[in-house]
Length: 413
Ligand SMILES: Cc1ncc(COP(=O)(O)O)c(C=O)c1O
Image (tube, rainbow, N blue to C red):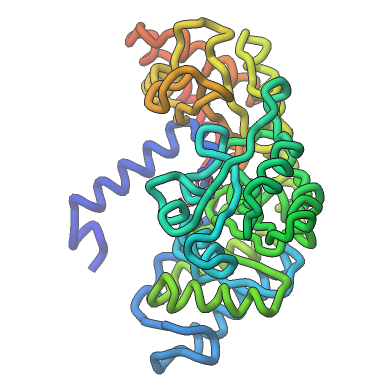
């Protein structure tokens, strides 16, 4: 029986969501549109079975095909990132980070990272997260003038707190991360370096951002952002000793049975990312981000750090109008058919629920085939949408223009 026949309501809602995705412009930096092949693998009979354990050492019978699938996912992940070991079982990026921390540290051990407000992720030591409940985070800072990473601050905080682990990799950082510099600091204080490349993974493997290996001891990532796979996590290392600890920390340390349908979809996405076309895609993401950034700056907005080197940008709305908030802009843009999220700007005086900025990214639009000239048009739509925040009629007008524009760029097939 099809879904439509067995559960009309859910089928209708899924159809409505598909139409929403097609008719709007997805500007959330952490989202993407997966290929039909990835989607197909995720929706298979592989959801039926338990495969607790690892290939060749399962706690359930009947896992022969699962072993082959998981081994393929592991091999492809290792080839993509150029490393020795990969664990493809984490259900999400946050799960990957928790397991990586369990492998690197004992409860109560200190680590350093950037804080949430400066572009970090909640799994990097936000006070309500397991990373801060079980470990002891301290935070390094962005440079106030350049609004980019301040490696002197990283070293100073590391020397002061003697961390077991140093975390780099961010949720809202538009510039290149110097993994070699981070490794030098980690070596100086005897810490392990963990690079969470969740956001930039696709750029790293596509040649549009330096790779975290061989510098990082442990690399974690999500598989669903620039890497364009199903929702999930991944942990890698070059150290046999850490690999054993990581495997143990994922299962049985923090998870039970792996989501094998998702692991199959990860394998498919990794296979796509190994193809030469993915390099073209990664380069286009960055070119599109630069074009969007230029368009927005020309319209009077300021970008944190003055621009972008990767797939995302932080737009400081105050340069356009002191009264504009991130919350207002997010709402207005959604009404105008453009989806983004409010985001704090460095040293933002407004609270996190309001903020003075929005975070915009180009991975999803690049998947739909938009190029630099199209991004200039997107910048015009964004500016018009934000400025029309109190004008519902104008927002509706923009929304229909945006829908017509989006219609020219098909979803992946
Ligand atoms: C840097 C970073 N790490 C980890 C995560 C967590 O990923 P997930 O939402 O899959 O748990 C995110 C999510 O946005 C992220 O930006």
